Amino acid sequence: MKPRLVVLSGAGVSAESGIRTFRDSNGLWEEYDIYEVASPQGWQQNPGLVLDFYNQRRRAAKAALPNAAHTGLAALEEWFDVRIITQNIDDLHERAGSSHVLHLHGEIFKMRSVLDDTLTYPVEGDIRLGDMAADGGQLRPHIVWFGEPVPMIEPALAEVLQADIFVVVGTSLNVYPAAGLLDYVQEQVPKYVIDKSIPPVNHIRGLHLIEKPATEGVATLSALLSKK
Image (cartoon, rainbow, N blue to C red; front, top):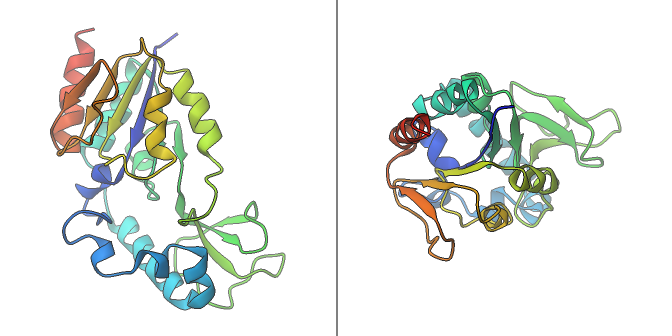
């Protein structure tokens, strides 16, 4: 059996494919109030604005291509049982060839009923007001907004607890509960953190820090793991 390599990926991985992050300089939050476009309250107040915001994100994701970080992680499947836990809503990990991808915060190419979060449909184009699910509910992006539960956190935690190697790449570790997954990795498991600006992780012992952008950092990781 291949060793299980569990990866927690964040916005920094997709940023090098041209997908704008939220928190970096020139990030999306500089243009939008987070609660207007990414909260249940914002949806109630102005669903048209929310749909337009995510329609734009969907177009951007569709136009983007996987970068060397995505393909590098997929290539590691030759030697490892790679499990990707991503905070990203795009499908670039899948398009790069990763076999096991768990989306913590939803998927931009899915939509769901406002009445039933399990009633989902694929979507490539825009979602508009008046587009209804089979149960009569307005369709909304299949995205976890601030203030909503994260239903995939339990399956993600199960993956973390089975990790033989754990990697964090391209995330500021500011968004919970995703950021807390690192705290559950078993003590003896090798842990790598890759980011162009290493987040505060001093409370975790035995970390291997790779302070590089995701594309360069994953290449460095692959070289290090090939020596093991």
